[in-house]
Image (cartoon, rainbow, N blue to C red; front, side, top):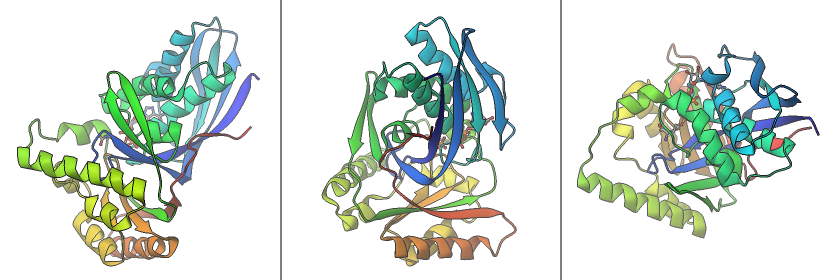
Length: 307
Ligand SMILES: Nc1ncnc2c1ncn2[C@@H]1O[C@H](COP(=O)(O)OP(=O)(O)O)[C@@H](O)[C@H]1O
Ligand SMILES: N[C@@H](CCOP(=O)(O)O)C(=O)O
């Protein structure tokens, strides 16, 4: 096999309390990519459709991630990458990480799967660092593993796969402004209050327990972020109104998706997830801000081969 076409889904990182460690995979939105073996070494990016992004290998997250897996594979050929982008860059639903994880998944398939998913995550992190200025894996792991994931540590890299309660649905609203992950990271404080740390790590523990036991009430009470959200919400117009409105419509919890500006809600059941979508729509349709709203199941499989 010398060529592969894949679907690389959007992801929601942080999941309120789990900054840089928790994430889950969406299934209704994602990029397509075509990767072909070439006789010349290295990575070329010959086509990007959908958004204006750099074709230069070292400026594109897909190029840098591709170079990382090639270096480890130590082969005397290379790959060409085409990206059909549907996830808007700077959206907070893992636009850059979808390209980074998609390319390493595809090259691994074409090489005969020499690397496991944790190794692929490490290669993709090299690419994601181009976009966010920092290596983190919470938006990459859900794409490569599917479902909910927890980044136990970066050194050594250890990813835990968490269960998804069957009735859990996500609703996303994406106000059409760009928030760069690097900029959303730059506004975060260097130090946090000890009491906030206690609240936050208790919430991470109880959210993980709630996912394992399908305890929707516990999941709801754990979806709180006292550390990052208070700083980042100012980058997102109507955040407080949208959050309050979605909670009134029955959401289990609402928070900033990744580094924003997208906002995610988790709900029990598709009917409630649709009501939350309507609540988000009602908030933003009364403003001048363009927006998109969608409901998604939690994608258990992550990136998939199309042909
Ligand atoms: N293949 C790519 N896909 C998306 N963004 C990319 C890609 N390559 C480089 N970038 C850069 O990464 C930034 C977007 O990434 P980021 O700020 O993390 O947004 P998101 O949260 O949507 O991933 C933009 O500056 C964009 O130019
Ligand atoms: N933990 C990171 C996640 C960034 O996710 P993205 O989808 O916005 O790229 C952060 O919050 O900075």
